[in-house]
Amino acid sequence: PKGTAVYDAFNPAARKYSRIELERKFLLPPMNEKLRAMNLPGKAILDNYIIGSNLRLRQVDTGGSLVFKLTKKINVAPGKEALTTIYLSAAEYQLLDKLQAQVVSKIRFLLPHQNLMIGIDVYRNKENELLLAEVEFETEDQMNAFTMPMPYEREVTGDCQFSGYALADSYGWQNQRR
Image (cartoon, rainbow, N blue to C red):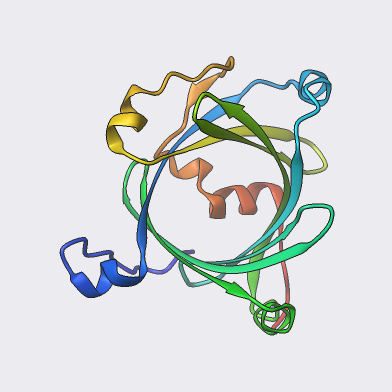
């Protein structure tokens, strides 16, 4: 379903416009009541994974404003992705939103922990709910030393079943635009 783009970390042109995202992911147990009781700030996210590409079109609703982004993500290694993002106007977003995509909505809650932010994403479909914690890091040492402070079922960093596209496939829908 995704494109076959390759990220060449040794190519200066590739590094000029992208950055490496260091991230670990954890599958969380169901905890809706606990999550609500924490009263964490949240935002609604709508992701469109453009079919046949490595592109994600995103709308973020913080409750007061909308932010639109187009991101290209290329997996470099487990926990490492080359990321290139541009911000879009509403008109640009609407133009790109016409592309055929696998679409998913989620709520992201933000939990501060020491000098990091843990994003807790809640995905739902008619039958299931999935909670996934994502933590981004500045350095590989920081990433490797991190201990998850919340109870979790298992770490899913690098597991393709928990990629954004796979989650959109399981918890989202395909738009039929052409």
